[in-house]
Length: 256
Length: 253
Image (cartoon, rainbow over all chains, first blue to last red; front, side, top):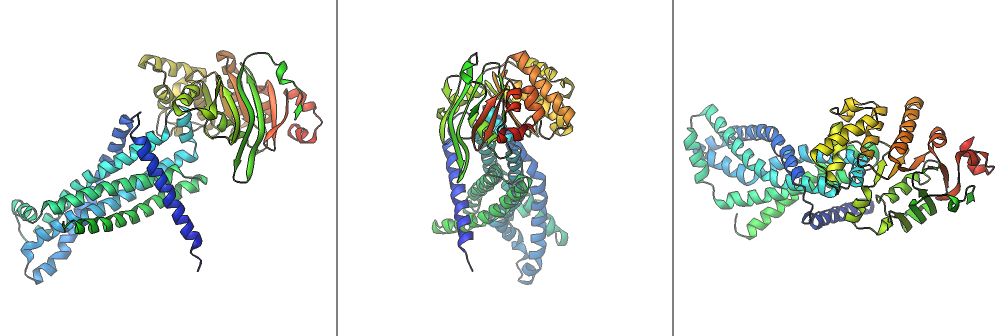
């Protein structure tokens, strides 16, 4: 089996993405700053993703609780259910699932939008109009994705835990106050902060991969579809790789 | 090169000079020592087969592509040597009509026309922006579409709006990339008439890329035949039509 073409393509993509990221850091600090477009993208990427993230987070918390409950009951530790779900959601499930849904919605949307703009020469038209399209389209979207995902993760975690409280109350009776007291009593900063910080890296990965795939789109309308699709696939894989690295780092720092 | 008309005899100020332009993509040598001059108020059509490098040449002129070798002088500056901010100042004086119109799908017609005015280094007041947008839309006969989205317009209307956006900064040179491609003959004729009216009204110089012979005939002062990446023949439409060279004759048959 010949792996050489696949390896070459992989290395080319990694090289291209690294150069793209380098360009982003190089140009991102220089004026002109596209503040208006950044705020617009925060609205589109953050606010408009909230209903989807909220719904999936609620279902996740509810289902997780209902699935865990029988095992917890059989071990006689049903009262620990809020603590277990709280730690699982805050430390791992919330950030990763939110990031994956975010990659599906925003990664594909950025990939398709920029890809379509590339093949219909809208990016060239922008450049001819005296606009740096890299700053206007890429930097604003990457920054918006980077800063909005942690906010969505926090909101998603809260909604997920609310769903879990509903799940507990389907078969039992736990007051809202007692539930949240149990969740927070079992959480430490070392649970919350690493999860919060890794969300920035997830957001950055989704933003830059979506932009890279879309901005370098080719082959007409077929290329637009490929850009959107590969933006989601690559972002999802990179999210798991970042998660794996994050757990190694927090472990090395004694935060686990 | 078959030079039917001697360039040096042409009167007027030269607004664009392309000298010894080379551009390759891998082993594909698209432009090979291409030369061209455009006079103030003149309309030059570059005629060539598909894939002959016409669009590559026009994209080099506006700085979207970097040539491998050669000079492109506009307003006294060599385009390939310019930094971004200098290039933006030159671009404010050059309009570019894209083959596929390249209208911004997410913006209304007003947004499309306002975008270059808000992004250029020249400062416009809101009143100037509004006035210019309406005036330009009236020039292309589509003032009523101001709040419509590009997707709601027909092909001919989109081309007119794209032309209005090209005109919005009142450029001195307009570059047209296949302006009649994809349009029916009647709409194509209307676009050519509009291009001629605009040239007359704003005294612009035009560099037109086309293989539509109707466009070549009615919109050109001079025609440049691009073959094998270089300027194969230059002359007026009538002069080139009489030309007996088989490669030139092929276009006019």
